[in-house]
Image (cartoon, rainbow, N blue to C red):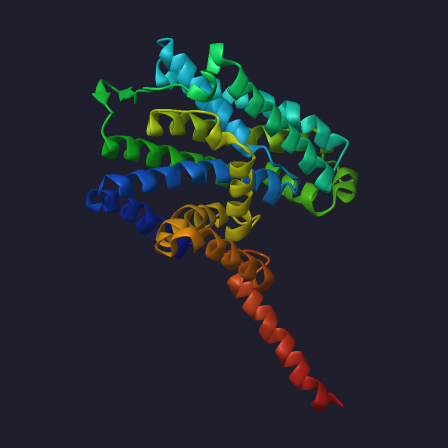
Length: 323
């Protein structure tokens, strides 16, 4: 399956816009844009696990924390960012395999509780193992890397590196989803018993959906650490795991561009609602609830929802004539 010319043109325009737009932004705006790209990478991984494979995961922020702490610790020990990042990705991949084993025995909300417990264990580790993670004081002064001798300490150069890695991560995920692996993940989501009867190795694909999703979170964490220059346990708690799930669901679970739109809504909309002061979280939460009632398939399901509504209306209007 190949992309249409229109799709490729829109994608090229979006990349050009993301290349030009940062030159017009101030420091905080550029930081938010970079953080949005980091969250997109993390949400890509969760969308694979939840949206395409149909598994419940509430520990994605914990995986991101593993990636961030791995890079921070190794960079403090003198290891290059470009060597520390693959280590973080592989380590998250291994932990993803580990947390995937409960998915072989429990499903639905039971699996959600199992992954929630894993995130809680990671939080306790980040907070209590001060000899390694710095505890509640965290790890400070995490420097941004160099690339071919060129420093990425500036906000704009680092943004372009994050943008390039986001595009690469998105292209790799698109290739995976268009491969037989992607069809196997969809079969696992739709009907595991029927998928197994057609030769899909349920055990292998269940474990791989968690592992690959965790690897994406590890890459996001590896970029998050030098972006903020300081990490501590709070950003990797259960609240942020729920936020990542919200990004996937709001944008459109099981839709490739769902995490892109969902992360923009979850990250940027609260910023524009701050004029409401103490009420902005309530307004944001109410907006999400309303959207889930009318668009349970996410924002990217507007077209299908409208077509379904029109079809039902046409059927109702045709009944008196048939009678």
